[in-house]
Length: 393
Image (cartoon, rainbow, N blue to C red; front, side):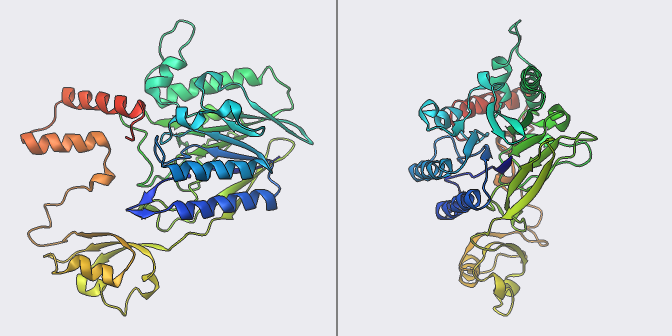
């Protein structure tokens, strides 16, 4: 069985104001071409199809066109991630043409999509993103007591149901699980980036890789760098395909790819990375203003997307204009002195903090004292309620 594993398309996303939809369309053209050229049997997309719960119209049209083209050549399996609205992504799924499977219902997560090749059946279990505040009730047992409020508890229960269903099926069947989660291996922790929305608000995010033991291949989404969390001595292959585009400057040096997965008769996997060309180089620059605008330097970055930090003690006159004249595609320009009177007045960029941390800082700034536990808990509850009801978080 030959699978193409991808995730984190984030259709509709911008990069510091730069429209990426044309580039996302080029990536999806590459996905379709790979499916045809590599004779892919099934495409699995492990969440974050869209960048937000209410995607722009052009993003919806792009996904519609892509699914139609993919379904001409392979089975397609999609699951929602934490950025998606499961309800909106799954609308009309019952009417989709044969071969397109959009799995958004927690109640049916143990029902596999049944594929087959010359060696026998392959069961694909596509798990929607399981937010603890909702899934802990949806996955409650016969006593109707909710699960512990953690992603670990919810995904562990989901996998218990998957494995219970597996034992009732053919012994020669191979299994694939598709999930969107922050999975922590036993020997090395996964590497995150700035563009991955935090799953750990309230400390509910990480999941132990061991819960997937016994599965032949686990196709993960959420982390934007292709990587494989280690799972001890388990034979289970667990992999993040990574995002196909760079979505933040923390990803500037990452090589992006699609994961081609060959599943043999015994369930063993061979992974081949299909490189994804990026629309522009990306770079992070820091230094004195006079050095940054020196045209004899950084000539290879003239057409790149760049983040520029000017480190002069005082803000140079015409700083923004000078940097953008030197680098026409500078998306972020900021002044952060390394010495002088302004050097100790910097705070962490808002984009690097989660919503709870931002609010805690605001309360402390306004009141002059630390936010109380009750204040933090009240905001966290309100924030997660709005996010889970379809807000953009």
